[in-house]
Length: 463
Ligand SMILES: Cc1cc2nc3c(=O)[nH]c(=O)nc-3n(C[C@H](O)[C@H](O)[C@H](O)COP(=O)(O)OP(=O)(O)OC[C@H]3O[C@@H](n4cnc5c(N)ncnc54)[C@H](O)[C@@H]3O)c2cc1C
Image 1: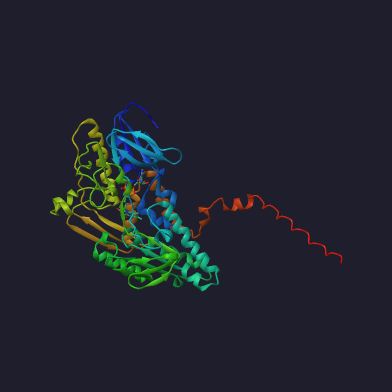
Image 2 (image 1 turned 30 degrees about the vertical axis):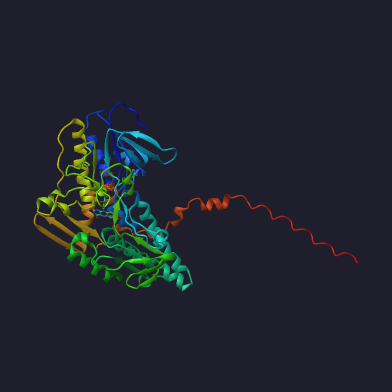
């Protein structure tokens, strides 16, 4: 890592906020004013709203991620994890991909570590569940689902087949509803190529503890989304939760029991628990406590934004919502805009200039529920325009296609969609990718030592 005399701006996390903040700082900074260092355990930023489409094979997984080293040129990118921060010494401890952990001094700090899946101590969940926060999970889920169809198509064991063809999703927010919508669509499509598997043989189950799904688009569109998914044969159980899933035996609070080899957990997120070791003031739910200028309260050299920050929603407060209830929701819409204000404020802070306030009124939400299906709520001043079906799906694609970071990735995503219109969706499982050395190992492993020669049978003694 660079050891210059310049002040260092350390950005912890190269996701949505980290990437955009780094780009903004680099753009606004005079040459060599500071060293910008981005630390992330992954070498790429993930555009999470596209994970459901990556899981369904509508977008190539590589096009959903943005390589950090390529897009934040001029910054130092370290692939590793920030494990602790000593605020008195202004030093962060970095655990790199390999080798010893080391200390990295900084002058200014940006906290953009996002969120992790919010789980509960449900028996079997850690062993059986899969989340939907990263591209690895989206690829894993797609391969796994298609592999279940392969298994079901080729077995004569009815129990194995039923378990393979039962898919349980827990959590009906954006991530859960979009993922089940996309994956069901893919499985329905794929079933056309199987002799012994049809859509009717599959069981898709969506469970949520709340009384509605897709709360982000409002009650009416949420209800439409629910009815739409049900019309495709997806069973939806609301106001219930999963009690256990040991060995894939799913037990719901409402009494339903099913055996499933696929349990997808999308029941919300919580701020990254590593924040507790960073010496920062945290809110009641573990978020970094920020003011409306995205500065961490009481620390004028630290800024935070995105899913790991508790930022006052000034637009809501100005509209009369009590301040103790008005926090920016954790979504990409805020993350992107906060990152830009944060970048400006870091540069201003470094130069001793005043800080800008962050205020953004909700512009609505869009959700895709499979090919040509979706819901969209667009807020225009006091008006809320509600769209559903194909039009909403176009809005979803248009909005996220344009929001995808970098021109390069936008082109790749639009190219995937265009190709998908003319060529059929790929429905092959590449599950063996997860163990690429297995076959070679079988071929190359040392031959077993010949079994020790059995002692020659004793000759019958001549009597
Ligand atoms: C499946 C899914 C669908 C979604 N759909 C929508 C949608 O349609 N619309 C919408 O507005 N929002 C959507 N969201 C939410 C949106 O993606 C997030 O709000 C946004 O990504 C938050 O940005 P962030 O920078 O705070 O966190 P992230 O983008 O998650 O970035 C956090 C980064 O921190 C890194 N990190 C973690 N720990 C460490 C550490 N110890 N040290 C260093 N780095 C670390 C991570 O590797 C990651 O790169 C969706 C989310 C998911 C999961």
